[in-house]
Length: 250
Ligand code: DG2
Image (cartoon, rainbow, N blue to C red; front, side, top):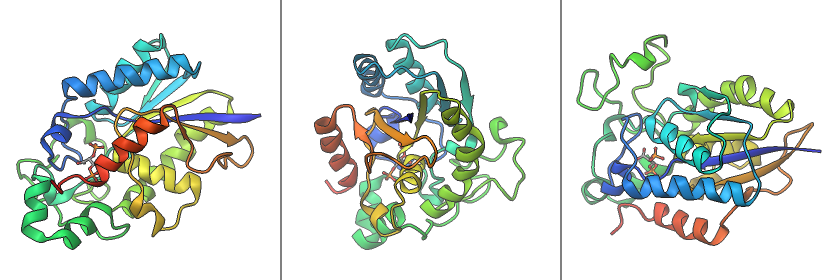
């Protein structure tokens, strides 16, 4: 027996389309992002991969993606659990900045360090600035020392893992097919954990928008049967992941 996990990065957001660093800014899906989410749901239905429960971040691009995908798969009725621990990596002072302009201003090495290094966070966002989350009601119960002002992938992994163990693993152990609808970097952190990737290897990992990624896990150890999981549409996923890797460079 195996446990079935499906990871889904939200469809293209309005800020993905504009090539802006997003992080915890609560932007909407673009029209093509909504289409991607519906297509993801159709792929789930065609593969007979029907979730019993869905976990999402607190950001509407992930929430709306899960709703559109599940509607398409006829599973709008399943239980929903949400946690800030599945949020995108907080992009600090880069939130709201143009990726191409940032690359041009700081150069490729610094740009890629901020985007993909495992343990170097971008500069912290200033409290009260336009794209900071101070006063956002959804984080009102978080202790001030937990609310991030910037994060690297290592920080994301550390704050995501408690939810993996306490929120998601119990559903997998109960034999449920689990859908996790989240973000490029919170899913990179989860994949790193699942596949036991090194800090160096995860630098090259890019997760495409709107492409369901299926993991069959050993029911005892929760180790993946196939390293890296299996995209339901592998060709489209590889093409889209290459575009994510190249962001800012045109
Ligand atoms: C993107 C990821 O996150 O950007 O925050 O800009 O998945 O929520 O759209 P998402 C952002 P990169 O780290 O790939 O630049």
